[in-house]
Length: 131
Image 1 (cartoon, rainbow, N blue to C red):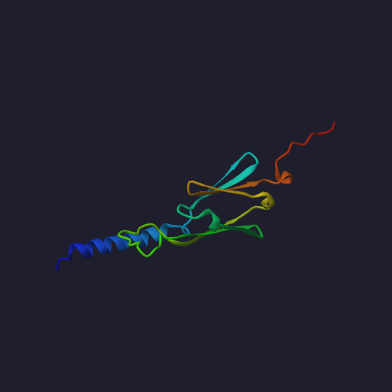
Image 2: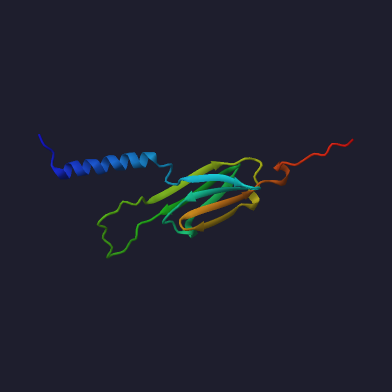
């Protein structure tokens, strides 16, 4: 028995959706890196209103929550809707060496950048030996 072309296309789309959603990490991918005495986290949040981004730090756990929404209105009718929508979140466990009281957040071009200074006590220092 031959499958109709539309059925094969539908199966292909469904398979792509399943594998795509399984490969995502809560919908928000990140990079974490250190430059000198500052730790940085870049989180991809394209299509998110910056005013709706919620950032909390509780017991050294950084949590970022946001929501992507479709354009809505009485005269809006989607022909194709492939971009993911809905709530996204990401948690990162932070070291005690980071000064979360001085955490800085910037959102530009769909990327949320968090900058967290390393505490002065945790920075490497040279010890002079007395003779």
